[in-house]
Structures are given as C-alpha cells and as structure tokens.
Length: 121
Image 1: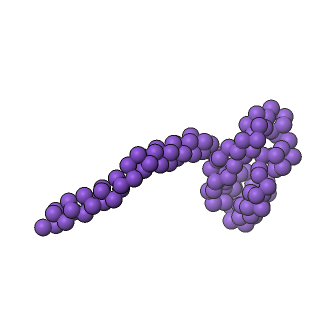
Image 2: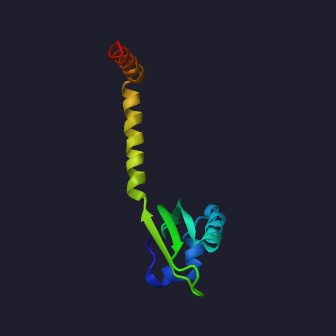
Image 3: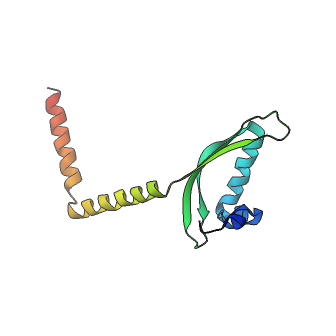
C-alpha cells in the first residue's frame, strides 16, 4: 500500500487513511456484529494506498475464544486486484466481440434453439 510499518500500525492510518469514508459506517457495523455474534460476515471493501489507488479486498473475522476476557480475533484479508483485473479484461473482450459481431448473439441463440428442438424429436 506504500506505507512503512510504523505508519501502517498507527491507529489513525488504519481508520482514517486506509478506509474510504463511504465504507466507515459499514465497518462499524461489522465490528458490532463481531462483538455480538463472535464473527462477521465475509465482505468486500477497499483499502486506499498512499498514491490514492483503491485496493479491493475480501475480509472476514471470527473471535477464537469468545468467553475469554481478552478474546483473540482471527481475520483474513485477500487482495482481489487480480480478480478485478480479470473481470475487467473479460468485460472488455466481451464488449470488443459484441462490437465486431453485433448479431452473433442472436445467431447463436437461434442455432441453439434449432439444435435443442432437433434433439427433443
């Protein structure tokens, strides 16, 4: 994300800088869910890198020993950047294919209907 270890461990960074304002209220709700139920649902969010880029992630957490006075929390964070890049590339390829052959979808559907009808005979 472009931050050094001291910056990344600072409380101000973890809440103010790394989370977009639009997600902060949802984050509070997730922490409340974790506190009340001992787990929070897996969800997508974004961290903000030093250069302003949003880094899409998948995150989830669970309390390991809910009865302990100082419970331990296990959490995972998965960088979704490769997945989001693949989705964007697939969308772009699909749009390019549609642009090159605007009638391909209707021809394919018609062919599929004919083949499907013949197989039922």
